[in-house]
Image (cartoon, rainbow, N blue to C red):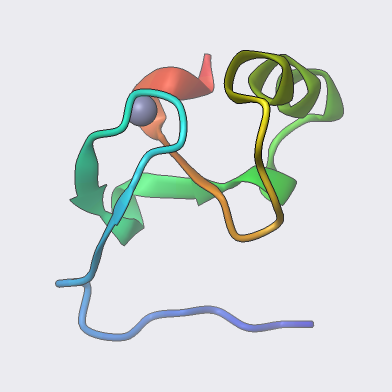
Length: 60
Ligand SMILES: [Zn+2]
């Protein structure tokens, strides 16, 4: 699993926390985050999976 998605950078996705649509490169996949943070987000939004993305703002 060394899949660095460095494609066009024009792709956007929805942040599962705040719902905003942002460029994927400004976001982080949920499984990249610290376990404590993942748990917090799971509690907030309820429904997440490995594909879920969050924006940099919600990362702290
Ligand atoms: Zn967000």
